[in-house]
Image (cartoon, rainbow, N blue to C red; front, side, top):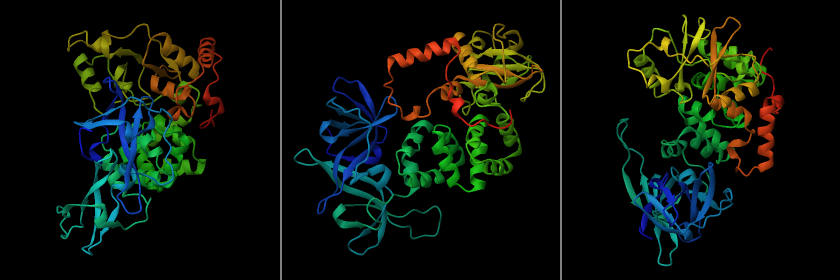
Length: 443
């Protein structure tokens, strides 16, 4: 090994390479097992490989740890990792636990763990980086930190009990919402609810949008009504509508009443459409401008850091008012076209004349064919008066057409099954998942 002592918290997110230098995945955790008289032994790493699948890599297959990267022998079992009895994940379960000093000097919280390679190429926990309780009432003062060994302390809580949710959230603060969602789904159900409850509203909203519906409902149910409504306010209206549609009608109405009026209005509007239509898939918050807006203004609008890439791919041009439902829809301008013109050019002169909008009752299958046929990222949706009511983006269509368990799917579909699906899509007979879902609201 190129390093003899490594702090586990710094390993999270490190890139794993094979001997040829090809990227294998990212480290998500370190796995240890307890021993009777010795410090816990390191048995391997939990590595996330392409496809969001988490696999186990034995510590014996790791040849180098250092400089923010890990080198392996290249021999990795790609079977999805499942935690066994007796195994403890350091980042997810050990960091944040309370320990008591054997000399009677008090207790502390584990903030990091150092693992060290032994003489026989085996790894074990060598040191704990802990923080004692603070002695001042000032909110700006923290407790004293110190290093200690496993032999000098014992756990205050039962082995296997979860760490504080704050430590786990801090460890994974740089994860993208989809990666954090996968991390939460790997936790025991009660632990998942606890950690979700500690996430900020906007962060939890982003994570919920990346989870299967059953887990979304479970987490939302675990929150109080006021907190649940706050989280729904932060979600995209179409995702919030999908989630509320899975709740009992009475619970859904309670949450809608507690939401911000403007947000609730958008969600109620979307709930009025069947889930297998453009109206049920669309979002009501596209970028909308007047025909007199300039290229400079349009580019400034799509630079917003909180804007989803699919929504930033094109700008909708309408007559006033400029919030859905708008005035008459005039057309869309793709951001790539804006890049070809000077900043002062009017967007009204750059409309895509070949792009026709769809109506809210257009089927999801037809919307998917339009996106595929014309290489589009989004398609506008208008009402009977040709007013813009929203846009359907490619991610919404994919999320709807993929199987319910696509987030945990290994990707080993049968080739004939994919070919049959493509054939059905072309002929218009594709069996949409929405046929099995509960219809949202009045039709």
